[in-house]
Image (cartoon, rainbow, N blue to C red; front, side, top):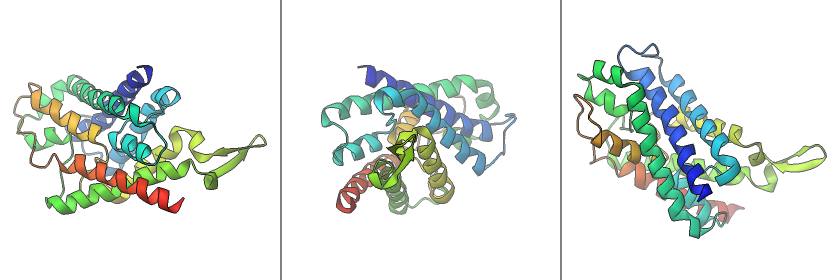
Length: 245
């Protein structure tokens, strides 16, 4: 149960800071409005780092159902814990999105005539709507994410520290932060790089139920892409990892 609690808290913080930077850069009268894509990708990278620093020592800080699935398929995580981790992550993502709305509530009121902008602070949307291409983008980006997370723990990435060998993954949050930033800058511009169902579906649900003035529908016709794409990508990553390593 302690591991589930920390997955909840870590994912909450991830979404609070991640959706928070989207709100800061998008909502009217925010001092950061218009700061741009680089700020958003940096913000999401640091959001992941914050979540990992909190949850890492207790739960391993998956903070992402796709990561949990990929690690389980690769034999690096017990299947008995998969369901509990995913539930905790999804609840954490929902709670984080609600906190973003409360924090920026005055700015949401000031942006009530821009429903697409408000939705974009909760969940992703494609730059060009082509569902199967968008699915491919989410699948490939998540495949790379999970493969790199698995690769960080291999002997080939070991380094010497105080006379002992340690895996790069033992550095904790920093390598994953760099991976998230790289994926966002290089592969994120087509779909907004959800690469995490808890980062997209849970805040999308929060958008659907919160009393946000002027909001549009929650774009449920697209919602399967940032869920199925990452899960398929994670499964592919696990298979490729087992084949290569």
